[in-house]
Image 1 (cartoon, rainbow over the protein chains, first blue to last red):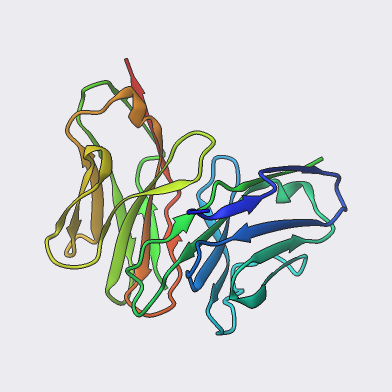
Image 2: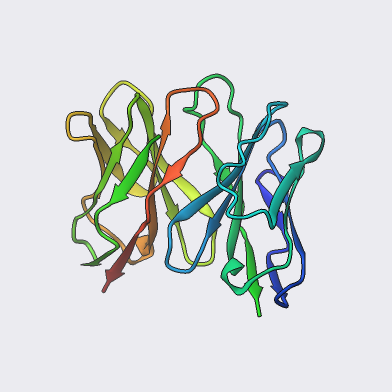
Length: 116
Length: 114
């Protein structure tokens, strides 16, 4: 597709279960980001992948959160032993990111996670 | 590190009135500035961005923003709003270095009333 694609769009899970959220970036975009948006809050940076460089994981809130990006394209965000405070919209974004940082970052529609 | 402050969490206005959504940033180096809009139950869409050159930037849907370096501000304006402009608006900043992250403000909910 032409845009950033995320799946699932909605996920309800029981507390303590693991979840995986998937992101397909725009073709050719070397940079990929994950953000979290909690109800009534701003966007919280989670992790940033840029080409073959080591990812910037400084935003991951705990060791229950991890992400990988296979083949420089698709990314999976994994949350282990989910807690109710993990309930949020998880937004993926991608960008060409050639050279300096003025490139537009394009966002997906988000994955709505509810932990019950 | 950079940070963004959106001074108003909620802005209610009447249709056809002008609106200004305020954004201030802090950074130790030069930055690029962005405004994104999020309509209900949708992802974020770029409204406009400032990279360099003219400090007045025009975006989609009749919005514009002015970069003021001395006041470290990037306020968003529209001279006449429509009901359809009701949405959450986010100001964001990136440092002018390769690989820097995009940092968002807390967002401003614009509600346009008839």
